[in-house]
Structure formats: C-alpha cells, structure tokens
Picture 1 (spheres, rainbow, N blue to C red):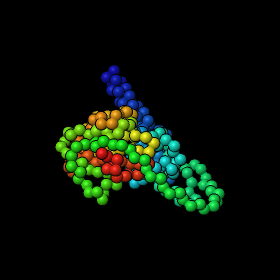
Picture 2: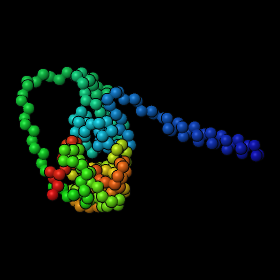
Picture 3: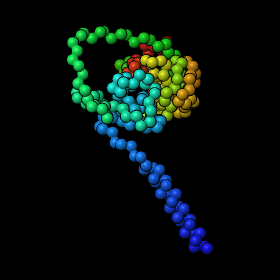
Length: 229
C-alpha cells in the first residue's frame, strides 16, 4: 500500500509538471518580421515607442492608430519606418497611386497647455537641453504634483533609464511624464486633477534625487517651461 501511494504521488507530480509546461508552451506566438513588435500584456504605446527609440506619433501613423491609448495583447505593430514596397504582416504591399506634388502647408503652432510646476526645487539642466525635458533637484520624499489634469496611462518601471515612471494623458495632443520617483501614489487608469500629489521624489533609475519632467506634444518632447508659470 505504501508503494502504491508513492507511485501515485510521483505520477500526480509528473502530471502537474507536464500540464504546467504544456500551458507555458501552448500556442506559441508566431515570430514577427524585423521592424515589427507583438504587443505583450501590460504594454502601452508610450512604452513600446520609447523602447524602440520612436515616438508615439510615429507608431500611430505607421499603424493607422486613431486612439493611441488603445492597443491589444498580440497585436502586431510596426516599430521601424516603412520602406518602399514594404508590407504590413499578412498583407501584400500595394503601390500607392501617383499624386501631383503640392506644397506642404506651414506647420501650425502647438496650442499651449497651462501647467503648474510638478515639484519645488532647483532646475538642474541648462536651457539648451529643455526640449528633452527638465530635471528638478530636491529631497527624497518631496511631493510630485500633476502638472495638469488628466488620466494616468502608464505607471511602472519597465522603461529603461526612467526608473519609477508616471505618464499622464491630458488630451489628444499632450502627455506629461514624471521619472525617477521614489514611490507612485496613483495607478494606470486613475483620473488626476491639476496639482494633485501623484508621487514622491526619488532617485530610481538615476544617480541623484530629482524629478525628470517631460512635456510631449503629439509624442514629441517639447520645452515644458513655455507652458509653466
């Protein structure tokens, strides 16, 4: 009877292991071609764009995305510029009809977004580098505030070089990013008001306590001081 119980236990353990391995390896995702990326659980378009050295605007244009906050797990996205004659996975490339050349209209000036300062402290970067955001030095635990009202579209530390990061979408054009936090006080999907405390200052992903703050217009970083009081 003892031998039968041990045999049954070993069989059950082996069966559970086999089932677990099968679950992990079942329906493997088809590899995507070079220049494309398959969306994983927890991904955001901002994270995918940053990890591939692109902007959200580029990815939205290349993939014909009307809503940059809505992507689905297993969706295949182009993350490299399309070349002449290239095709989307699963579709054949079709030559575009020739169009007469027309002069490009002058780009419209970006509408201003009224911001409040996200933290108190000393600006560490020079004016020449502000188009990539600003760094504000302070003390660990200093409050980080939402520069404008909006919705949290990213909260985590999955983007290399940013530490614990928050990204808030304010409208169809503008996002703000808050990097190197010590703790995050809001989560993805939360609506926040202007001036609300959303994090505490820290040094995650960097070598000193500070806030790295970015303002992005249509996915491209712009000088945030133009919109700050």
